[in-house]
Image 1 (tube, rainbow, N blue to C red):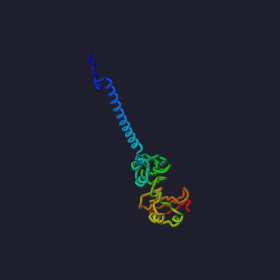
Image 2 (image 1 turned 180 degrees about the vertical axis):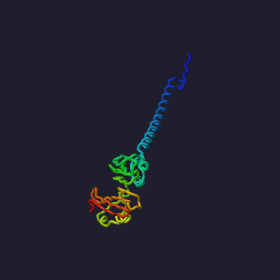
Image 3 (image 1 turned 90 degrees about the vertical axis):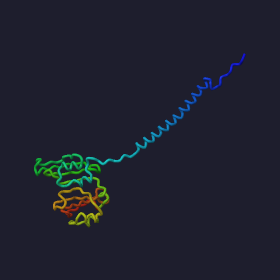
Image 4 (image 1 turned 135 degrees about the horizontal axis):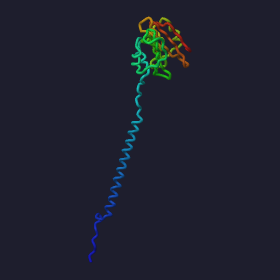
Length: 218
C-alpha cells in the first residue's frame, strides 16, 4: 500500500487564513498611523487658524479725530451724519423747524475712553458749533504742559506760537465759525504734568489767544 502524498504547506487552507490575518493586520496598522498623522496635521492646522490674531476693524458710526476735523461750519445735519456714519441723539431743540432761529444740538458717540462724545449745534439748519470730550488723539496725548510753559503764553499769541512753547498740538475741544473770520473761535485743551485731571485750556478768536485757564499745574 503506497503512502498518501502530503500537500505542500502553501496549498493548505490554514496557511492562507494566517496569511490573510497577517496582511490585514499590517494594512490596518499602517493605515492607522497615517490616519493619526493626518489627524494631527489637521489639528495643528486648525490650531494655527484659530490662534491667529484677527485685525481690529475701525469703529463705525462713532466720531474719530479725523471725522471731527472733516466736519466744518455751515454743514447740514445730513452732511454730518454722512461723515460719521450714524444718526445722532437729539439732546436739545429750540424754535420751530425751518426758521433761522431753530437750534438743535445732537450728541454722537466718540472714539476714545468711556464717555467719549461729540456735540454738534445747528442753527437755521447749518452747523454753528462743534465740541468733543475724550475722543482719542494720539498726537495731542503725547504733549503735556507745565506751569512754566503756561506762564510764558500770553494773550494775543497765535496757536502756532503756543505750539512752539508747549511743544506740540493740543486737543481741539470746541470750534465755532469759519477759519479766517474774526468770529472763528477755537478752544484747545492740554494735559498737565502731575496729578490726574491737571490741565490747561486756551481759547483763540480770530486767530489770537483771548483767554487761558489752568487747573493744578505746578
